[in-house]
Image (tube, one colour):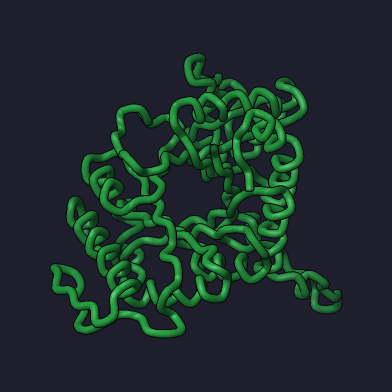
Length: 328
């Protein structure tokens, strides 16, 4: 059985940039529709389209993912929200308290995605100057302390990065379900951390999934997709995506003949991230290949978010349901 999540923007305008202002004498009706209204529509689309959940990824220059997740949970009835953040955002006690409150308000529908190994420049811009293995040591302590105060009254911990004396949650925060933990990375340190703490370990499409040995951990995949009625239409859309991002026609990449991944996805469009392009049937076949390789959770990425969420829910997910993939 596989579960399917849609990846939503951590910026309320969907990454469309700053909107131009109208002259002062023109009434601007856009003021009544703010960034969180756009995110609410994207989350509503995910729920209507029968996705299991929505990922609000960590974005150092976007809105705080836990706040975005709270908005998604408030506006939905059963959609799970996965909030991506790094351990340097707060103490594990405070992160756990925020999350326990969200679990209480949402019926335990919040999950965590911990981004451990940030790009050094990004980490420093966030006030985090840890490097190398110390990042994983801190993440280990972060998760240990968060789980400890969540489940034990009078919890005490003395570590390199965190100390707690007689902590722990009481009513009404006690007794909630701890968020499911998502981790990623292919280094030795990353896989060892997942073996001890992860519920889901998320890979990129190009990773050697079979080489990882994580008994009891669900394998996930973060996968860009571009699906249309037929392959030709999908590749025409891919060429438009490439062109809008500044890619030249002569440099348009061919899909990898072995993996069928097209390397034209990415933050700037022509950025080298691998994903699936093709008809809904072609993309479904590619996803089934990953299911056969042991992947049980998919985080699909497609833009524009609202339109593509409906499109994938209406045309792609039913093909996977027919193949016994489970979508709640």
